[in-house]
Image (cartoon, rainbow, N blue to C red; front, top):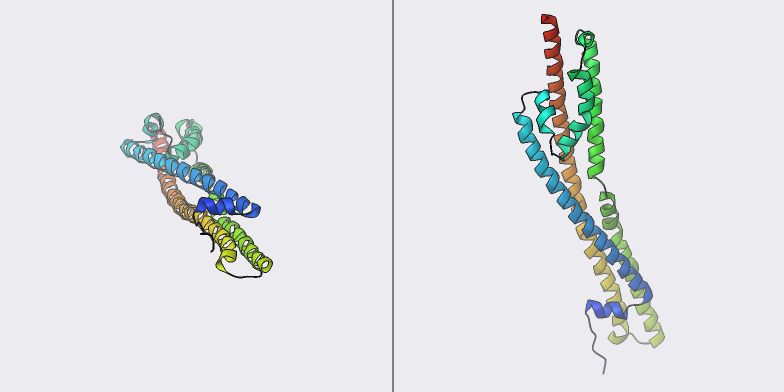
Length: 240
């Protein structure tokens, strides 16, 4: 009478060969890394969203760039505050500390200063997006390669099943089942690792795209405020 076949994952792992164990161990490490990145980015995005909402509330209440400079950036680590803080030194030197000769400069000079501010903001946006994209390439790599790692174990298990058939000279279930079980466990493990990684990667990439649009819109508002400040400074000097 054939021995009963235990289909539990643990027993299948213990009964698997060296290659299958290496495959399952690799997939386990990939799964741990994947979930660590998923949870880390989830917490980071929630924090950034909360900080950005608080920043926009303060930003909407600020009357001009001077008020933003004094109040809005305090104790805020959101992406909007980060790009504004990075550009503020350049804005400060170009707008807040203009001397008389700079205030009486031609419109071409103002356009050049605005261009410098825009480039500074765009550079800060790219740095922030790059920062938010950290580790996402690992999620993409795990999501793309985990099924193939599992497939390697699957192919190896099927090969073992055929070798056992050739060795025993029989194709009954007791001979085929161990190799097939090993193959199916590897296939399932590869999919189990790949699916959450692929889904999380797509969600986070979409979230970063929306953040990029938000940062671009915000940078345009900052440039408009800078332009208003320049016009105001020029008008004040003309009156004098």
